[in-house]
Structure formats: C-alpha cells, structure tokens
Length: 221
Image (tube, rainbow, N blue to C red; front, side, top):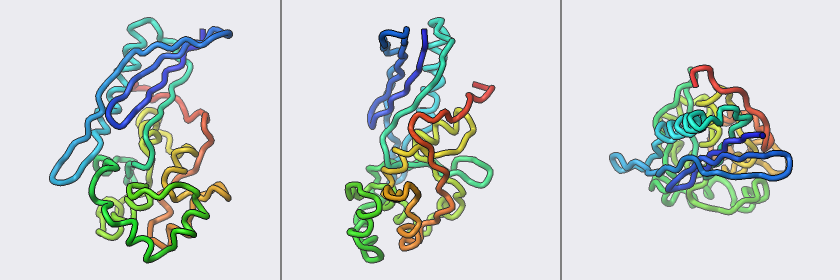
C-alpha cells in the first residue's frame, strides 16, 4: 500500500487527505480539517502562517497515531498570488499579507504608468487582478517597505510551507505563474517587467516542475 499525505489549503479552511494506492485503485480519507482565519491587525490583513504550518504537523501526527506512519510523500496545495519574504538568514520577515488586504487598492492603475497592460499580458498570459503578486510587490516598493528592502528570498505560500518542512528553497511552476511576473514563453521570471516596476529580481528563486521531490522532512519533524 502506498500512502500519500496531501494538504489542501483554501481561503477559509483546509484539510489533510490521506491517499492510499494498492496498485489498482486509490482510496481517499480525510484525516484532519481546520479553519483558515486571517488576522486583522492595525488596518492590515494577514495570514496566520505559523498556525497553518502547525496544522501540517497535526496532520502528520494523526497519521502516525492511526498507524499510517509509512507516508511515502507529502504534497501541499494552496491559493496563489500571496507570498512570504525571507531575510539573508532564512528567517521569515513578518506574517504574509492576505490578498484581500487594501494595500493594493488602486495600485494596478499606477503600475500601468510604467508599463503597458499589453506587454504584461504578452509575457505572462494571466488575468489582471489587483491582488496579483506583481501589484502587491509594486505597492511595497511605492511605500518604501522595510520588509522588501531586507528581503533576500520570496516564496509563494505552498513553497514557504515546503521550506518550513524541509529547509529547501524553491518555487513550483504553477505557483510562479500566478505572480504575473513569470514569462510563460521563455519559462523564466519576467525580469524586464520587474525592472520597469523596480521590483528586485534577486528575491525570486529557481523554478521546479510540478511533482518535483523538494527534499526530506527536517529531523525535528
């Protein structure tokens, strides 16, 4: 029996699903479900990322307690566009902002004073939404964000959780495409767009294909 543990995070709730494959059929079992409630602090909306990470540990513990401790692999799926920033020591710089935070109100229109919508779409091919990563970062740049100035690495939410679990820094392809900063034609980060908006390109990591094995769980887990 092959056991696979999958964590599915939505905007308001999440769950841990255990998939079992016996060579002929797949059986799915929900082993853990939890709320995903953002935190509103001093006018800003954040994800409670450390609690969301803790739910992964709970899911693993439940598997062990149910004698399903031979887990072959763990996978994580979340919403797109949001991210965490790491400093040069690999420490998280503050809680990740929620895409519904008001810091991007009106920012998309300001971005088009520096670059055309046609060019952005020709490179990235995704829908224009005011909360896309590109506009979150442009907002931080316009507001002289301390976090952005100190950041050495940007990780999308599932990649950030992977980093917490393994210590490995990488960005999965489908997560990268939600940023509106990834050139789908060349399969690389759209550095020309970043340059036009003064978004630092050195914070973006290598991109891996979906299904890539990131690494092994940290020994403390």
